[in-house]
Image (cartoon, rainbow, N blue to C red; front, side, top):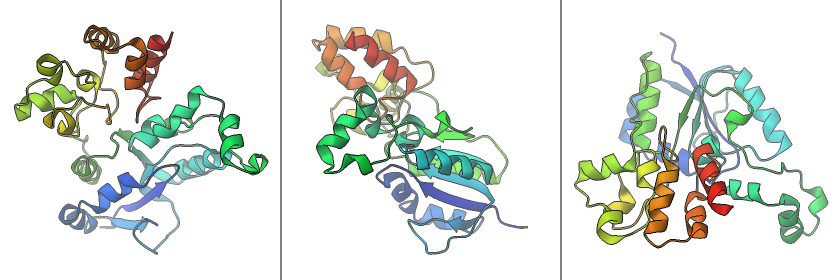
Length: 256
């Protein structure tokens, strides 16, 4: 049987999610036998043109050229999967969405008139249809392998939709908010990191974005009761997934 043709591309990002794929090592080698990696500039000189059966895309859309490029990618991809916070929520660079980007270009660049950029950093789903979103900053390599495996076997990916709190309970962690009064986004954040920060007695920073139906308003109320200001609470939601809808709306509410 003909192997599925896979492409892995990037937009505005740090490449961390692509490196997570390369870090899969043994697991990736097993998957590589079942697919044809046709386009992956991060790891290979081999660059075959589409169409592709599956395209994995890291990074946010930040320029007019990006808009054109992602639309072309969508046309040549049977299945389009966004990987990481940048591609699914605009990334840390979406913090500029609350400011005037022209001010930044004036400060950073000697000749800002040569800079062609959008006024916002946006997720790919703002411009094209996305078949599956894999969250994380960076993504969980085992979740990515699971998504690829599911596509190869025509089944739905088995990616847990629960919060980081469940991961804490599975690891036997004592809640840092209850025991230490530490602000934590775990109750509203999608699982996938194996509760790494709470495991080291730190609050969750929301790296995997909002879980399904998060009660951000209730969490904000509790964080403020712990002694944080509304401004601190607003900043807590403006991290790697600041422009994810649930986090964006809550941060805006706390800013008022």
